[in-house]
Length: 116
Image (cartoon, rainbow, N blue to C red; front, side, top):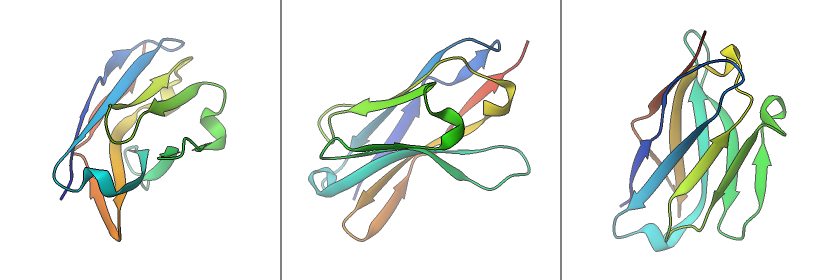
């Protein structure tokens, strides 16, 4: 199995930056195919924000392109989400996700609030 633990959320003013971290652990981490960051804002569905494969390929939600960067060295090192030029609409609980063989794994989430 795989356990995911996120950190780095908090309160930031519009235009500010935060870096989220996700650490994966467990006996199946060598079978991780890809990891991603999702977010869920109040009253909205959970959506994928950025994805990173073990081969280094990345994808981003259109609204965060140029502002957010996903990085890491799966599974040895944490996976990061660097978030710059944050906007109030980025406010959400951010979840780390891992695809392991045929299974999906989620962290508990970390809250990001963008407000003045």
